[in-house]
Every structure is written in C-alpha cells, then in structure tokens.
Amino acid sequence: MSNQKFATNALHAGHDTTQTAGTRAVPIYQSTSYVFNNTDHAANLFSLAELGFIYTRLNNPTNQILQDRLAAVEGGVGAVVFASGTSAISTGLLTLLRAGDHIVASSSLYGGTYNLLNVTLPRLGITTTFVDASDPSNFAAAVQDNTRAFFVESLGNPKLDVLDLKGISKEAKAAQVPFIVDNTVATPGLLNPIEHGANLVIHSLTKYIGGQGNSLGGAIIDAGTFDWANGKFPEFTEPSAGYHGLVYHEALGAAAFTFKLILEGLRDFGGALSPFNAFQILQGLETLPVRIKQHSENALALAEWLESRDEVAWVNYPGLKSSEYNDLAKEYLPKGQSGIVTFGVKGGFEAAKQLTDATQIFSLLANIGDTKSLIIHPASTTHQQLNEEQQESAGVTQDLIRLSVGLEDIEDLKADLEQAFASIG
Ligand SMILES: Cc1ncc(COP(=O)(O)O)c(C=O)c1O
Image: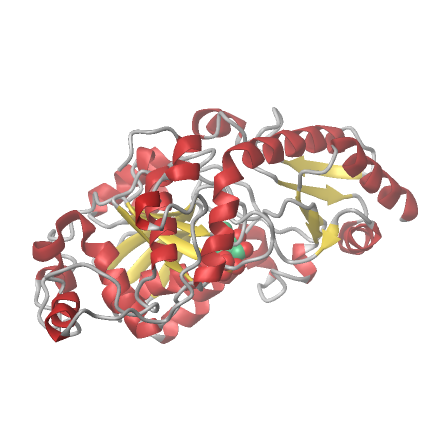
C-alpha cells in the first residue's frame, strides 16, 4: 500500500522504471509466455516458492503494473484485472461461491449484473435475493444460513442511488460475509469503498478509468480485510484440490483471495486482460483525477439546466438539492457525483425515444464514462429484457433517458439538447 495521494498514485504506483529499461511510459509486454531459467526455476514458480511470470492468462508485467496501481488508488492489498467488468464480476463470484450458496444484492444494479445474478447463476445453484438497498436492515433481513456475499453498486447504474455503505458493511460483518462493492460509476477519484467497510471492490475499467471508450477491462481489488477462516469458506482453509493442496488462508493470509482469483479464477475461466488494453487503461487512469472532476462539474451544471426546462418531467442527479440521495452524496461523494444524469421527458416512452434520436453531439450508444457525451433510452435497450416491475426496482421508467456527460463545453451540450427538444416539439 502506498502512502502517497490519489493523483500521485494514479500516475506512478506500480511502475519501477529501473525494472523496465528506464521507460517513462509503462511498456506493453506483448508476450504470451516467459522463459524459465531452468526446470527448477519453473517448478518453483508453479509451486509459489518463488513469484514470477508463467503465462499471460495468469499474469503479465503490464497487467501487474495496472493491478498494483489499482490496489494503490483503492487502498487494497492486491488487485486482479480481467477482460471486462463482467468477467471480473462472474469470475469473482464463481471463485468465491459454490452451488447452494446465496447472495444478498441491491436491486439497483447494472442490467448485465442483474441478469447474471437473477438468471444465469441460479442455473448453477447460486441464488440471489434482491433488496431495496436504501435501508441497510433489508440486507440483514434477507440473510439465510447459506448467504456468502453482499453485492451492491456504490452509485447504482442507472438509478444513481447513493448507498449507506457504512450501514450495509455493518450488516455484512454481522452476517460474516464479504461486502462486495462495484465502484465503477463513482471511481476511486470520488469514493473509496474500502474506507467504508467494503472487502472487495469491483470495477468495469471500460468506463471512467479507461475513460476514452476504446478498451474493455475489469478489476477486483481486495481490501485484505475479510476473515476467510470464519468457518463459512472451507475452500480457503482446507487443502485445495485445484492447486496441489495449497491452503490459501494459511499460505497467503490477507492476499488469499487475490491469489485464488489468479491461480483458479483466471486459470479456469480464462478471462485475462490483453496487455494492450492494460496499457490503454493505464493511460486513462493517469488522467482520471482531473477528468472525473470535470465530468462531475459538467453533469451537475447540465442537471441544473435540465431541471429548469418545461419539457422535462423530472431530473435525477445525486448532486442536485432536489435529489433524495443528496444527503448521502454529501457524506459519500463530497468531491463530485460523477458524470451520469438521468431525466424523464414529458410524453413518456415515445418522446424519450425521439429525443434520444435527435441529439447530435451526444452519441446514442450503450456505454458510460467516455470523454465524449453519450445518450441512451434504457427501457427500449439495456433494460428491455426486464419486465416492468424489475425495470422499476432498477430505477428504469419508460420515460427515462440516461446521459453520460462528457468533457465537451457545457454550452454546446445544452445547445444540443435544446435543438433536440425543439425538433420533437
Ligand atoms: C456498474 C457496472 N458494472 C459492471 C459493468 C460491466 O462492465 P463491462 O461492460 O466492462 O463488462 C457495467 C457496464 O456497463 C457497469 O455499468
């Protein structure tokens, strides 16, 4: 762990230039595999007697720098990167859980994560109870004997609900299960979930951390704070059949889950991040401290402007005084509330679709966190698989438009929405 501040870590953590021929930029190590000195050296690497690189599905020097940097900016003991945010979530849960286990999750989640928990994992015997996350006691009430994780988003996509992370982490501690927080929308620039009791932090690096809309990636950062020897996680305290009898908790202590993610999660599920994407994401991470401030400033200004428009039925942005999450935002997101704004258009589903089609600077696409401004109508796209009741608990109404506010001049963004409102009458 580094004692330096966020902006310094975002630029330097993990990169020892003496180990990379003095290169100031992190190099791309575009190699699948690494030459062993001899068979004894290879044997030591496989048995963990010595740490080093074996094969890029498990690790890679460019990826390692990104991992160390992410651990530093989130305050964890280790991090593992994956091919996408979804790969991070699915590999993380499949490495942690077994058939018969149960998760308590916020009902306000990214649609893909909701579907994984609601449809795909139950096929493998892992079930989820979704709760209204605005009250931490709802998590406690949903705990069963077989509950093995709590899962939330620190700033829900697209509901933009700010959670009482301290309250939920207390309930996770009482239930003796790891508290997993997807911090994609808030980013470590605005919020560090580990400071509020999270045990594992997840990122889709595809969004603000990469920041340029050019590379998929995901990560899990391990706080190193969870007691895997509490009796509920025998795969950490008994010899692993999958890794020649290694007892993770005994051998690796606070880094047990980080190593399990590499040695079993990446080895068996194979969702490795390309070193080229790791390089691109590192370029993004270096400027995250300045970008996320500007995204937040632009989003707040646009949200306030939307509130003043007659065509608009409602606006949701946690930085607005009118937001039901404004008090929690002051507590958990005092530096800014990120770049996502949602609003309802008078005229409902059809008017929302028409407005989405009429913007010129805002690009109609299914992503968030790009430097460029983006727009989507979730009810007809990202959330179309959910029924109306599920859409509602995810915060997706028929009239809702989601903006990912970019770094363009704010006056140009207002003018674009103004001409779009005018064009739909
Ligand atoms: C909050 C959140 N988590 C995870 C994901 C999944 O990430 P990826 O698209 O990189 O698989 C997304 C994608 O939109 C997201 O918004």
